[in-house]
Amino acid sequence: MKQTPSIQFDETCGQYYVRLQVDGIRKRFWLGSCKKDAVANLKDTLKNIATGKITFTVSETTATTTPDGVRDMRLEELAHKYLVWVQQNLALRTYITRRYSIQAFIKYIGPAMVSQLTRIQLSDFYAWARQHHSRGPNGGNHHLRDVRTMLRWAEEYEVCDNPIHRFPKIHHTPPTTRRFDDGDMVKLLQRIPAGTLRDMLLFGLLTGMRPQEVRELAPPHVIRSPDGHFHLCVEQHKTAKMVSDPVPRTVPLSAEAHAIIRRQVEQHPSANHVFLTEDGTIYSADVFRRSMERWCHRAGITQRTPYALRHTFASRQADSNTNLVSLGQLMGHTSTKTTARYISSSQEHHRQVIDRNAESILALVAASDEKSKDGQKVASKVASNSFSKKGKSGCVVATACATAR
Image (cartoon, rainbow, N blue to C red):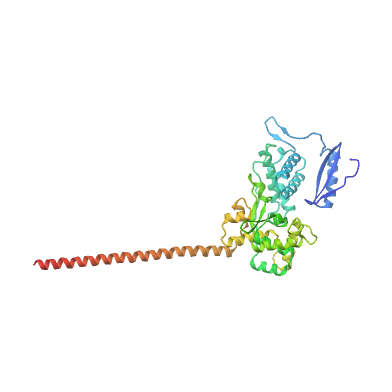
């Protein structure tokens, strides 16, 4: 390296990196999200290159096979192959998230072969991630899940063998409900002014769409059926790549939801998206989230992210006794287990379930009592008729005997 390398910043993932070239071979090294740490990491990287810990080789692969038939390669190469596959087959956001976790793992473990990994190393990495990458009780869980997924992917696709047969247990704390209750929703709607952000909030509550789908909603997504009703048809959605035969997601639009789209499109008829910021650009995930949290704070309620709108939609639909399968189809889920996680377990909802069950049971009891009463009346009438017939036959016999005498 003849000149001092310059550090660059990747806005898609919020990470600093540097490109280094030795003997015509170029490599990119990720240095972290903090500029100060990136400078220090660059010095360590240059030192490792000088001492030979990091080598630039013309070899296309480090994959080897031991005499025992065990497939192995360097951890860095496995990570590269896996992330390329994720980028080509999964959503961009998934790629960015997994790249962040995998790069943190590579940095923590250091240069090593895949076969050298041990369960205790994964356990130590999980503890480190929970301490340094934690925003809550479930911090670090994504890091360990992504590493586990990479190692299992390597074995499934016969890239190399997975040396970890039993992964560390992931500690999961169930999250608290994210839904807006009626009181908080009234306070937020009273505080937030009329405009695009308010329309996005209402649109999320009316349709249950993912925040990303709301942000990226385009006018061509709106379709009018022959009966005059409007609906959304989204071909590129989150679960489309998770099934072998993907189908477009269809979301019916209420009159209010369609009015929101029409109002927004009239403000910028030539734009490619429905909801735009004041600068005329599409809402980013970070801007949408921070805007929601800021207005929740101003309304004096618990701060929630845009995904709370989707949770509120699912919870209110469940409170209205919407079938779980139908609700899953509306929300674009491939499994009802996923839908069940969106339904908040509130005491009020449980009370309504118990009350409805009690009403149905009492109705059965009342029907049973009514049938019992009818049965008793019939039995009593039959017994009465039988007694009357016996009495009459007795009188006839007595009369006949008297006549014979």
